[in-house]
Image (cartoon, rainbow, N blue to C red; front, side):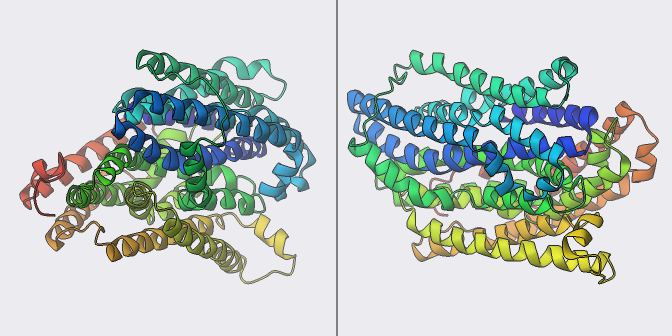
Length: 522
């Protein structure tokens, strides 16, 4: 189901690139979409889900259906009340929110006004998708993963239809995308409600801040606002700084991030979603041995998928961007700049995936203090590296000439956005490393034998070398049409995947080890 959603996400981004390119209007939409999307990941997929699922799993383990229903109803009521207030503030304060997160837009009044107007349309998506996340968390706790995993596909479908069918109806065509986001929120929430009703857990919102389960969730949420979403905060800071850079920088980072999110969302997020309720149940049942073996299994899967995904995506960065996005308003220079950012993001892809695997080791145990300390360190480092890398790149590209002024120099140098991608990758490794070290102190850190690392590294190098040799140059790809480009890309991906898998088998990795956690040992 996640694969279906991610493939539709690719189609969505191809459509947006072809219809709108990397323009000031596209930058305005990306900012207006990223702000509620960031809050969605921070509150809905981040702090709320990671606090709600362990507590809900504990209630489920007790076997008291009425107590479970009481927790669901009270939590839904509290969440809805809080979201209504946040949404109202976000809509009314849209100009200040845009000024905070994209201060560079103030230099272009038309772009600032467009971003503000679209944010007022997209902001209510936060409320709708947070309620959708609650519904998904309930279904995941009940062992139902398919429908929640498919739900994001509705956002992609809605944006595709908005761009292709309705954009021509607007004086400013890109406004259709903002309305597509709002419609998607309604569709996603409505999609899960019938399933909740079938399982007898359809929420009846009854705000109760005194409910013991709600109070525990709220206590757990406060630190996880930081601990679960360091990567998302980093990406939003990228938007703030990128708004000061060369026009198109926000869009270049967006498309690069979207391509990195494909393997991360397809596998990292899916694996994290599955192991969180499993680990929560094992912790509640006092099964520390199975807890550790489940973490080991998750790390093995993360390594087997994450490292070759990073290598392959880095090698194919420019062919991927050209084949999927370089049409219509999206010119070759934009493709090259997005590809540069993607290659740098790939340096951090295994670490981003590692955070998705390691963080549930804390949240399932209802330990939120440790991740928040780690998050603050990683976020502070990212902020420092953002400024450092951007200034160094701007100085290098401009020949160390800032005579025209700092901000003018930043805005005149295409390519400086790569520094933001590098800062995100660097902080992700710091975040993952500190999370692993914390689990090691508890004797819960996942480990892999050295031979497994060697197998994956060798197989990834073989795969990367083959793909680099096989693929035509970027200049040659630009001469081809859509279907020829996609055919070459498909050949590269399939050939790389087959060679990687075959090499792993020849090096002795058993496929059975990937299917489920071992019953004995580590």
